[in-house]
Structures are given as structure tokens and as C-alpha cells.
Image 1 (cartoon, rainbow, N blue to C red):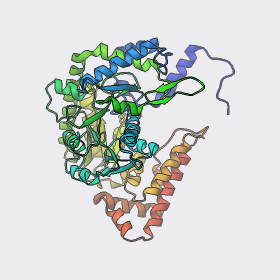
Image 2 (cartoon, rainbow, N blue to C red; image 1 turned 45 degrees about the vertical axis):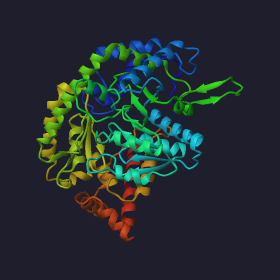
Image 3 (cartoon, one colour; image 1 turned 135 degrees about the vertical axis):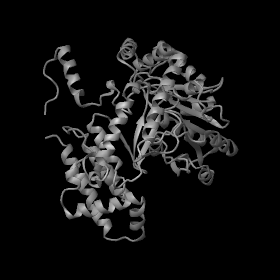
Image 4 (cartoon, rainbow, N blue to C red; image 1 turned 90 degrees about the vertical axis):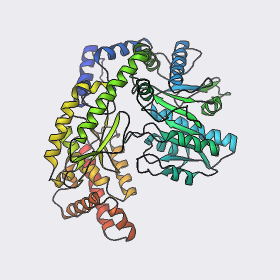
Length: 511
């Protein structure tokens, strides 16, 4: 296999190849995506690229060398602290993304608890809808997760939080909003609990950090979500989301500098010199700092308020449109720009099959599970496509209604099967196998669906599908049945999952 050209290619040819590689990417410039990308327009993107280019080779590793980058960082942190009412002593830094910010918080509270309370078996309390970055951080940094279910409003259940507080609790997490359903957790109540028990309360505001404050300034009535809630000790906010900065730029803040000191890493006796770092990354790309700083300066407070107004108008139109489709229902009462919706009849109008129909119409659609749903993250750029989205959604529902077999075809098959199989270890093992195979040298695209491999015409597939349809009708039925009796169904379903893995891996390999 030969991948490096013997001689360098002309710039124009390389740029053309770059363009060709993106032919199958989501069409975000036409506002056909509902996650991953925050795209304003071509002129604005060109402006950000100019800002990025000016500092593209600058390195934030050493703040005493590139003083410009430290000035950008100071301004970004100060602006974010002002937005989130962090107070005069607020301390923080810029990071590469929300995941880095969240993982840093896990490390910080772990080390702070070790230093101040001598906790050696740390635990953290999170909701089941907390962003997966918190689960990742817990795994990376050896913190035990105490996962709390949701209340009837899809918020973290405060009664369950109280039950899980113990002497090893290093932090409590709230989200504003959480990613799956766009629900704002009861931050004020969590803060009060934390204050009562002397436990830090962190707010994951990665999505809402550059939207909720401007919604509020535009007149929206929102519950407390930031440092104004007593007991809130830290927050994370992504500037590359609703701050419309270039990828990747996030921010982590603490009200008390003592927490930030627990975040920092220092190696004073390294032969390479004294080394100190505020975040996970060593090299920190200067272009992202410059573009984030430029975004804040170019949009200004009023610009962000106007974008927030347009975003909420678009979100209202989407929510109202979904409410008018009798086969669908919104999950919870999302107050900002993230929504999720599900089918009222999961068997005869499968929501994942609806997602496949929408995808075939050119929309990039995210799927959720527990419960089965589709997801949308709405921005000010969606104004001109809302009507088309809703019209296509109506057509997709009509095409799927009365065809339960569509749950086991296309991309719907993966979520329909995996989301309802109670064999967690087997599912995780097969997903890991699929994902890891996709990163082998010479691998092709990662393919997460293969309807033929999953369903086919085999008797086994038919049994598995019938069981899953039953579980769709009564969620949890399959898990209860298998837990109650270790019957042969376990072996049948294990083989079914193995077939999924084998089929997807085969399809994903480069031919």
C-alpha cells in the first residue's frame, strides 16, 4: 500500500483532491445538518479563516512566548466569565473542545478532593443524560460514576441525587441543557444540595454557554443555569457552538481559583526545562484562539442577541410543526434550541425508519435511544429550511406508517437492534470491534448499518426481530424476561448481535 506521493503535487491539485474527499459529507452549507456544525454563512466563514490563518502556526504551549495568544485567551475567558456571572475571582482557560473541558473538570475535582478531603475512592454524581464526555472522563481518571435516573420532566432526579451523596462524592453535575433532549437540569436546587454537603457543583453548559445568556438578554424566561445559583463552583462552555467560532474552542471556568490550581500540571525538574500546563493539550493551536477572539469581536453582544432570537424563532417553528404531526411527540419541554421527538406508535411507525427516510432526502439526522427518538440542534442558519424540513418529515412519517419491517432495514436496523438488546456486554464488545476495525491501516469507511446482514431471510433474524418489536411496544420487556430467566433466548440474541458485528465489519472493510 502506497499513500505518500513520490513528488509533491501542485497546490491546486491537492486542493481539488481535498474538495473531492468531502463529496459525501453532510451538506451543512445548505443547512441540511442538525448537529456537529455551527455554520453562519460563507462571508463569515471566510473572515474566521483569515483570523485563523494569521495565527495558524502559533503555539499556545508556552504563554510567555506567544503573548498574543495569552491575550486572546484572557479576553475569551473574561468575556465568558461576564456572560455566566462567574464573579471577580473567576479563573479559567481555553480548551480544544467540550470533551476536553468536561474531562478537565473530572480531573480537577478528583485532585481537589484528594488534596482537601483526602478522598482516595472518588465518586461523581451525574444524570443518565449527562454528555458522554463525563463518562469518558470518569473512565480515564478512575472516578466511580453514580448515575441518576430522570424525573418525570426528563431532568436529573433530585431525590435520587440525595440518595447517592456520600463521603466519597467529589462533584455533582448538572447540564444546561443536556444534549439528548435539550432539558435544563434544576441547577439552583443542585447548587443548594452541593452547598449543604460541601460538594462542588459543576454545570455542563457546553451547548448553552453562548446561547442561554443571550436568550435571557433577549427576554426569555429561564431558570437559573449559571454561577448566580449559590453552590455552583464551575462551568464549561463551548465557543465553537453558539459562539460561532472556528472548531475547536471551548472554555472552562471556576469561581474559586483554588479549583483551577488543582487542574494545572507542573513538572519543575524535567531536563527539558520547567513545564506547566493548564489543560490536557500541550501544543494548543493559536489559530483557534484567534478565530474565537475574532468571532466575539465581530458579533458583539447585540449580534449574539439577534442570533439567539432567530435561533429561538426557528426552534419554535420546528416544535410547533412536530406537534402538528399526530404520529410524533416531543420529549419533555425543551426551552432552548435542542429538541428530540419520538413516535407515539414505535412498532407501526418506527422513528428510526423515519430517520432513514429523512436521510434519503438529504438531511443529516441524529438518532437517540432510551427512548428511541430523533434529534435536532437548531441554529439561526436554519431559517430558510424549516418549512422544507417539516414537509419532508410529514412525508417520511406517511411512508413509514404501517410498515414495521422498515425498522430492520438501512440505518434503522442498527439502532432498532442494538438499542433494544439487553445484552450490554455483547453489544459493547461488537461496537468496539466495528469501531476499532475502522481505524486499521487500509480500512474503508466506518459503516454502521447493514440491513441484509442483520435481517436477511434466516430464521434466527426473524426471531430476534419479533422479540425487538415486542420490546419497542413495551420498553424493558426483553431485559426483564432475560434477567428473570436465563433462557435460550440469550444465546439466540448473542448470535444475532454477532451477526450484526460480522456484517458491518465486512461492509466497512475496503475492497
